[in-house]
Image (cartoon, rainbow, N blue to C red; front, side, top):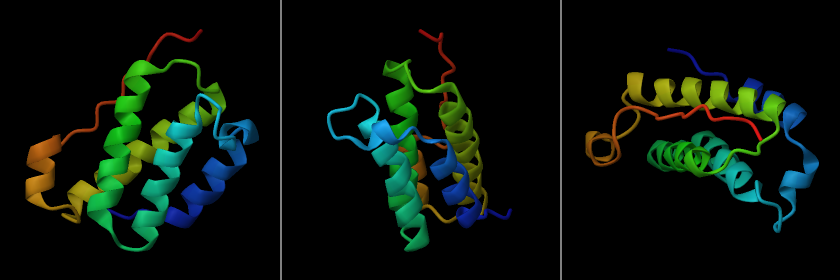
Length: 111
């Protein structure tokens, strides 16, 4: 399976509301998780990228006020990236067993 990280960098950066980069913004944590997963993949630290994708998914379980356009791109990115990591066996089996081999992405009611 192929995964074009450069495409996703451009895609996500074109959709993210700039206010999310303010440390006191509610969505700062989510954006940070997404960005960490990108930079860790660029550095070939796939286990770390996997962890931040899982954290981003867990974040979505408890937060429901993410911009729709950014959310859709983020969900597509997370699914694609997670599948790339697991299908290409870039993540240790221990990590997959510990945190689960599936990415739980809860779609939630918009506020």
